[in-house]
Length: 303
Image 1 (cartoon, one colour):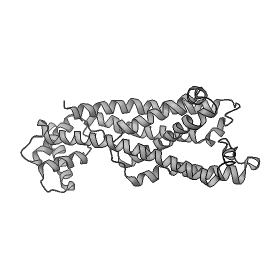
Image 2 (image 1 turned 60 degrees about the vertical axis):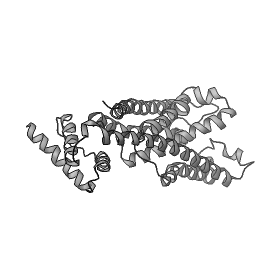
Image 3 (image 1 turned 180 degrees about the horizontal axis):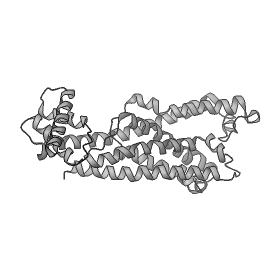
Image 4 (image 1 turned 90 degrees about the horizontal axis):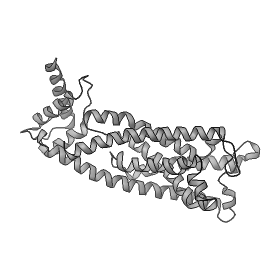
């Protein structure tokens, strides 16, 4: 088994375990917060828990991780763990949110209270420490299937912008006395020294910087992984065939033998890698058609 295939299967297993774990830990932490009693620092418990960005960001991260599980399971069958671009963008946006909560907890909230209270106490160890770290590691090292575009960075900060707008309306426009939210992030205290527009702008810029750092790390790992995978499908003896036709037949036969049920998944990305090797000039649509024909022809022979 090549290093590329071995790495791919390891990624599938890690993704299944880690994504399931993250989703479960988020569910556990949210349930604990809903059932908690208020204290001097955190009064947003029960349904008011959803007023906090930390809770919403963790829930989003748990949902995004759960989206990856079916693709990871499928990747074990075909040695081709590959997420759709939209799933990677959802992961990017969700990871930016929890990474921001981690950064704020470490740099701002912890010095105001204590590192133990913010990072290790009760469900904070999940919300502020474990869940963000798992999400960041997953996005950078495991779920790095697509190069994240610079345009997606603006999408990644949309939840932060929307939450900031909602917080402003419910806290500063409506107010707690009129049915709005309590100023649980104590923004009014900050505005005594910094104008509110600058506070909001600063938070958005920090979120943008976090998104840029995540994108740079993700794309660096993606570039190395893609180079390894391309090298395998262009040099592996299993696909060292005289023409792209026979190489596609070999790929279809291998995948068909691993799926007795005959559930077809067209590996467009791999076919594109093969085309780079053989330079046949055939469009990807034609390569996909050839793969489908070879896949089902092999299945009919087996019957």
